[in-house]
Image 1 (cartoon, helix red, strand yellow):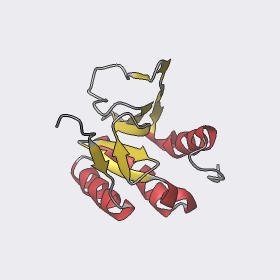
Image 2 (cartoon, rainbow, N blue to C red; image 1 turned 45 degrees about the vertical axis):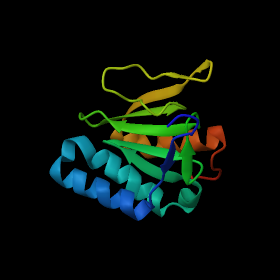
Image 3 (spheres, rainbow, N blue to C red; image 1 turned 90 degrees about the vertical axis):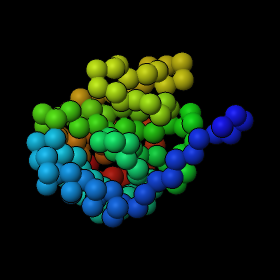
Image 4 (cartoon, rainbow, N blue to C red; image 1 turned 90 degrees about the horizontal axis):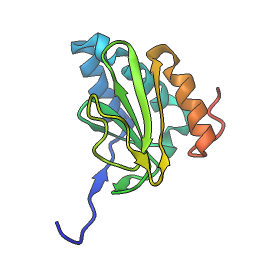
Length: 138
């Protein structure tokens, strides 16, 4: 569409949790860690400040219920080996396996590959650091 921005509608935490529960049941190595992270965030006091959606296998967190092109979002992608790839980006099309994360505006984005068992700690520290939520209890 010329002259219009793409808008992505987020989902409820219950929908996201159900999606990753189903994925983890079928492919535990790929999705168990991401499901545990989603389950934790869905029950956290700060969950109302985060608006989730999925893009194929990737969990995406935003600050608003409708996400526009160019808006910052935190993407968490399962790598299939018990690790999760976190990246803050303003571009919709990432991650594509094998691609490097894009720049965020004119500066390098934030990205980390972490073991799934440290994902909750990494996420809560990062959310506090960028000011999306505070007091995440880490």
